[in-house]
Image 1 (cartoon, rainbow, N blue to C red):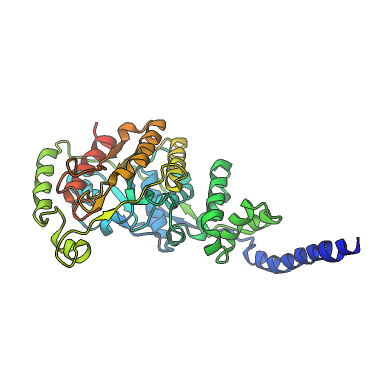
Image 2: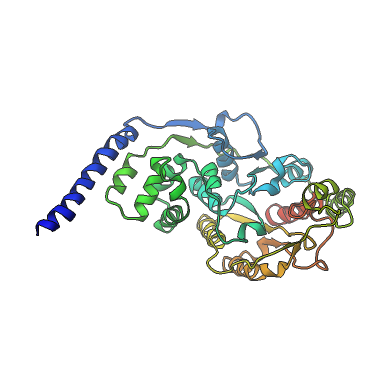
Length: 388
């Protein structure tokens, strides 16, 4: 009995007191009776077309929230496919300039589905009926591991977590997935950074005091988003045949015999003899694939909010990537998931596995759309979201 007291009960009591003394002052730092500062979209002066990320800038949050709230604007989420938002053929430039369709795109490299899912949870008050497009990349699914920790941290700042966990309209189905995924893949790297992240780990492990942490987290600011109904003047005579032919001609000009941009080829994918390097693709997991699970969560969230959604899957260059057939099982799983949620017609799958099916000029390098590739996407987006 003495051993039980000395070696088990007393150490447990000591540990509890230690946690109390360590966390209680920290929690008090977060506790405040003041109301969060309100920031309004009515002060936005620009029609921004592209954002790299949120940059801890509340204006960027307002731009995205306003875009989602507008029923006649398209919001695009993607990664390196967006090319910094500068090329004229990108949807965020071509659709406004040639058709009068407002578009906002956000993202750069490694902006993948779990980050996008958390962003959509944060912007849930503005999701109802939103027009949303997500550019998918095969590379997101190749190792089955989901969004990288640094990308999660970049696109899901701590105050996003605070708003999500305090939104009573977000079901436990979503908050449980959030805390489970965080605890499984990010806690070891991010757990010591902020109390908001600590809460997710504590919730998942059912640590006493998790609710105390939650109650001490207060919103950083409150978004006030004005629904400004803009009159659309969409070009009623889109000339897709001309635009597609012109963009294809222009996209083919800088390509070499491998149908890869010559400067990109020399810098990244040629060997010392000037031949194309060939990469053998490893088997891609089609079950227990975290990126696929994240896609399902995104689809469920958008279904709950009646979003008007579309997706495109980019191709990879089959001369550079050998054994692209290794992707077939995961592509079949994605097709099945799209069908399950009723999005077969809202999903443009341009992925191919061999050179006979590959369309020269659709990519500028080995994995990113050319202007011709984007023109095919632009036509799809117009017909899906704006054609009357």
